[in-house]
Image (cartoon, rainbow, N blue to C red; front, top):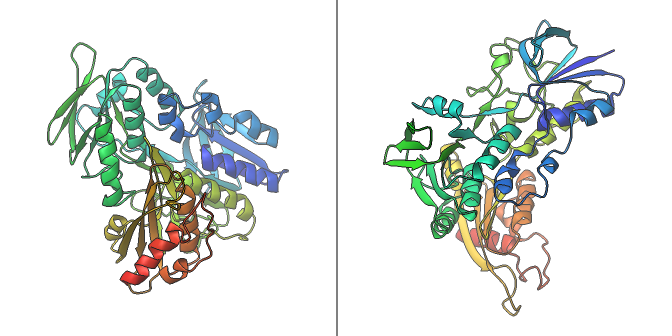
Length: 459
């Protein structure tokens, strides 16, 4: 009988348990999770703040009971204190009873996920303990933010990536005075280039959001009367009812320091079959796997391993754990980190490298930007789509794309270019690919092909 230990159970842990038990229903699979819930879609917290969620319980797509019915032995509210990877044992503590138990396992699956970045800023720890500074990651955080939103008159959101931008949008929509703070000089700076972020910044300003860009947070000062917090920055200060930290995530892998090979940030490196390498060994282990936010991804636009915590990556990687846990059979195809966001009436989607992302990674690229109506002007209504295509000037291979529109659904455009990147398309091939024309949906030359054709003309 094979015994599997799965440490951590959000997205990767949930799908790893399902895939392993579906392939091997006779195995003993132990799942350890420190929280009392699993599979929470934290990307819905901002939508919940703005009352766009029908039922918060639907933000969970699985449960301990569901995995238990598949045959998993669930250890909820258990904190794994120690894992001896080579010795194949782990020590866990029941957070309800303080009882400690040891498990001997044959195979280990590390799906410990990620943790919010908590910089060593004076006053931050006190603010988090007091509750006037909040995090945005799990169900408990979501409950606290939703409750705060009922009465708050003002809020500061630190971090202008997806999480921070969506929170700032929803707070402004429900009438909460909002300031969005980021050390970078643009909103969504790691997701979109300037032609799109400029439009987003104007939308925030139009909706009353104060943008504090290029502001480094230097201190949190709690109000002496037990109310409010002042966020001190390199450029000024903002006194609000509550602050929310949304400054990104890091792998939660400290249990495996010195035991598994990792990137400098703590992301566990894996091979194409999701197998981790035990420190000091030259080949990946046949019995140790990692997936999700605790692990690296193979980033196709650069051809290198990177850290990109996305639920979509976690799910795909976890499914491969079940497929490869006996022997390597199905390779990881990598990722383009395709994503989308809607802010006010702006729909945005991206895949692969932005120009800024390429420069940060030392990759030489060119970018082409085109704006055209998504369908013919003889239609009673149409709307512009702004497209940016990022490509290698030497090989002409596509490296990324970004799309923005006020009405058109651009999400599937990003998916289409994601497929093109994974297939190694050049701008020439994308310019000539078969894309439909029908006046309800598209111009005779679809905007995806049009921006590729412009890139060809510029090359």
